[in-house]
Each structure stands twice: as C-alpha cells, then as structure tokens.
Image (tube, rainbow, N blue to C red; front, side):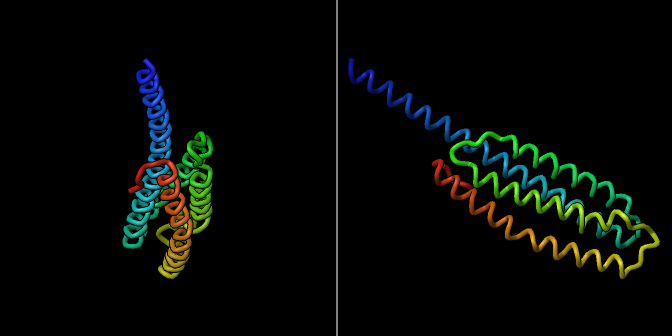
Length: 162
C-alpha cells in the first residue's frame, strides 16, 4: 500500500511541475506572439513607407501608424495584466521596456510620416527615414534584453526557448 501512495504523490508532484511548466510556456509564448505581431506590423509599415516614397501618397502609412500605436498599447496592457508565473517578473519587465520604446518610436519617428502628403519634399522624407532608422537601431538592446530574459526564464522553468 505504501508504494501505491508514494506513486500517487510522485505523479501528483510531476503533474504540478508540469502544470507550472505549461503556464510558464504559455506566458513565454504569449510574449513571443506579442513580439511577432509587432514585427509584422513593423514590416507592413516599412512596406507602406517604401510605397509612399514612390507615389507620395502617405494615407496608407497613416492608417498603419495608427494601427501600430494601437497594437503597442494593447500589448502593453496585456503584458501588464499577465499573472507572474515561475519567476516571470524580469521577462515581463524586459518586454514592457521594449513596448515602451516602441510606443516612443510610434509617437516620434513613425508619427512624422503621418503628417506627410503629396507636397512633402524628398528631403523631408529622407530625414524622416534617417530618424526612423536610428530609432529602429535603438530597439536592438531592448530586443536583446527580452531574448536574454526569455532564455533565463525557459531554463528556470525547464523548457527550451526557440
């Protein structure tokens, strides 16, 4: 009888660990999806800016810029509301820092494109692109911090981050 009780306790312990690991994986996956959604929106915005440079029609850029800002706000709220699981505080904080950077970029470098129209000079467009390029480069340390925390979080919680 004792081996049976011991076996049940062992299985229950494994189940709890597995549940904790599953929650940690779910949190990690949600943060990864947030980053992927932002990356996709960044690509869409980049494509729209490239097209607008050719035809000087920035109306589509404006729409995407608004969508980008809304997405950043939505993801900030989502990450902030996420329950800490398995020591996720540093991972969440690094993602929030990245999102706050993206929010500043949306309000600054991206916003300048929303004020452009067919009368905007090529020089003004080029200056805005250079400013955006500097901002995008500035995102690298934030993304590296998220990745570092993601790897540490995965190791702490017994799963492999891809």
